[in-house]
Structures are given as C-alpha cells and as structure tokens.
Length: 352
Image (tube, rainbow, N blue to C red; front, side):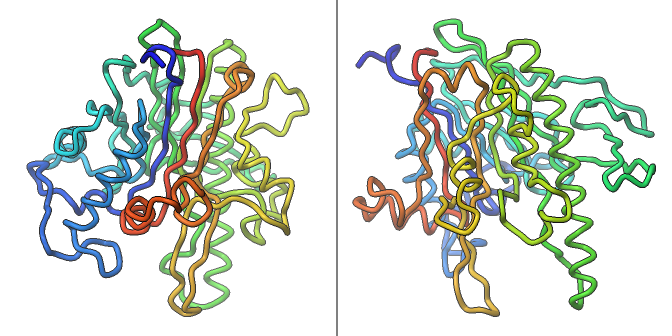
C-alpha cells in the first residue's frame, strides 16, 4: 500500500498528568521520581507512552491533558521533544487557546500528511456572554433549567478548533474537546455531593449544547467534521442523566431524526443501544473505598455524515478487550502504565 492509499488515522488520547513528565524547559523528566500513575515512575510512564504513541502510528493525535502552556512552560516544546525522542511520525505540535488549568488540549501531527492551523470560529463574546455559539474562549449564556434565568458558561479548557488539509488537498474541520467533569470534587457529605454533581452536570451539558451549535454550523456549511476528545460523559453513565433527558454526548451527536444533522460514533451508538447491557469502555479508574476498578466510555471520535459514508474504522485500544492489543504483552502493559484512559482511533479512507 502506498502512503497515499493508507487511510488517515486520527487518535484521541487523554494522558493522565502528562505535564508532570516535563520540566519548565520542556525536557522529559525520565527519572525514578514518582509519576501521577500509581506505583509508576516518571521514566516508566514516559517509556510506556512512547510504546503507545509508536503503536498508534497516527497521522494526528489529539492530546487531552497535554503539558501546560504558561509564562514558563510550552506545550509545543514538550510535545515536540517527546515526539523527537521516540521518533514519531506525528512530530509537530499545535495548541489553541491555553487552558486555565495545567491540562491543555493540543495535537501532534505528521506534517508530511497534514497541514494544520488553529482556526477558532464564532465571535468573541462580551463579558456578558452570548447565546449564539461564541468563540470557545468566550462566555456562553443558556437557560439550562427553564427558569428564565440565563447561566454564564465558560470552558476551563477551550476546545481546539483546527482547519486541516491533507496532502491530497482534502479539507477537514477538527474539534478537540475536554468537557467539564461531573464528579463532585471537594464536596463533603452526601447532600453537598448531590448538589455539586447536579451543578457540574448542568455545566457539562451547557458546554455540549455550545459545541452542538458549532457542529450544526459546520454541517450547514457542508464541512467534513470530526469532533474528538474526552467528554467526561456517555449515554447512561449516571443517574443524573434522567433529570436532563439526554447525555452531553447525545446532544453533540444530535438528537434530531434528520441523518444529515447527526454525527456518527459507533461506540456511542452501542452504549445507547445497551443501557443495561454490554458496552465498550475507554477509561479505567481505581475506586479506593470499594477497592476495585471502574470502567467507563468517556472518549469519542464523532464524524460528519460525509465521512461516515466512507466506511471509517474505529478502535478503542483497550488492553483487555482488544485482541490485537491483548496479544502483545508489551503494548498491553504500556497502556496500563501510561494513563487511566485508552486511545481511540478512527481510520478514514480516501481522504489522503
């Protein structure tokens, strides 16, 4: 198969505390100090990540929780150092609006196969905000609970909007997402946890409604669109979904019956079809009080109808559920050491 005939492989990967693996000059801290991973050193986590990124061999990786950008640190420097050290094809890095946290949304991509630019859409809102899909570093106003009061919503991690052109001239729109977590961090007591969970659910849904407005604008313009990342959400993932009718993922995919206005992700479709049955998972967390692991489907790659019609192939690189991974012990163990999320890929044929 020639390079031109090879499908375009896009990946999304949430790397747990990637930032802690680099110093302020963007150099890898490949030493015996503890990483954020349980009983894993920084050198071990970096080595595991090198194995995973190499195995992915993706043309573009949307890195969720990428190293920090601030007055002292550079996401681009850190990621390009990482890519150069491990000899990755996806060796050029790009970031959009910096995050308010130490977790950025960035991408690594192969410049021989893709040309990219940060291309934010929407008008920058005033401090008061706008209900009409403002730029993602602005403020969105939406009445979430139908009480005639508009809440102000901001992204702590503004989505990364990219204009992409493949080596053959095909144009794509990409949006990298890290939606707000619904977990009640910091709440003490059952009632406080419930209140904060509901409030966080509202904010997460508002972010997804904002995203959906942008999706509809791209679909109306006939754009080939990919929305990818960590939504901290999925169909049937918690009891609060019943209060609001839909999960955030369903909202972004599209609740309209018109197929021309729907995005496609087969893993989300499986979860929707089996609320109490088997469904795929993309993240694995240890719950200390229960002394067990909990798995969830949090990471998605959604594509527009024109891309779905090309017959893409999706894959969750799960160390226990993917036979192609399970049969390679080194890769299986690397995935467990590297992060609490597993990569998700989609191979798009006939776009290169």
